[in-house]
Amino acid sequence: MEFNPSQLGEKEVYKLLSGSVVPRPIAWVSTLSEEGELNLAPFSFFTVASRNPPMLCISVGPGVGEREGTEKDTLVNIRSQKEFVINVVPTPLGNQMQKSSENLPSDTNEFKAAGLTPVNSRLVSPKRVKEAPIHMECKLEQIIQLGSDHLIIGRMVHYHIEDDYYLGNYKVNLEKLQPLGRLAGNYSESKEFFKLPR
Image: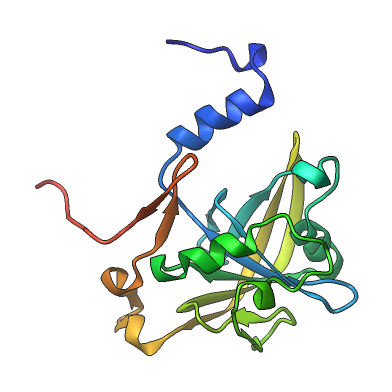
């Protein structure tokens, strides 16, 4: 099979991309609104953008369902407040992460809806997810509109990791972390690791 993306609808292209670019890490992004409302939402279009200075990027698509034609709260909040936190999602927090992804009203506190604990950050105003073992505090570097989506690039200004997940020498214990990955409509658990060549 071959496809010309220009001859397909947006939904069809998205399905091909999200089923092929896998597994994707999940950025569990916490932000604050202008009114001080807490917001938390997961995004799997996420990666490292730069090592020096350290930058991370997430791609935020348009609102869906009842909120079609609107911008997602995460984008609105980051554009306004210029700060956010990326929390890393371990597999045991999958259900809470899924709850925070629901299409909830803008004034809904997803921390509360998902039964999570907000804790203060060091250098930014948005809260961190206490239950997540890794947090990366970010200040907005730039937002680039790319077609229907917005690429948000943030500079990491502070990094947190729970002691149990830190191996020393700046290495993360991935076996303990069990990072949750996103597949097309499903998820994957990273727990078996190996080196190449075998």
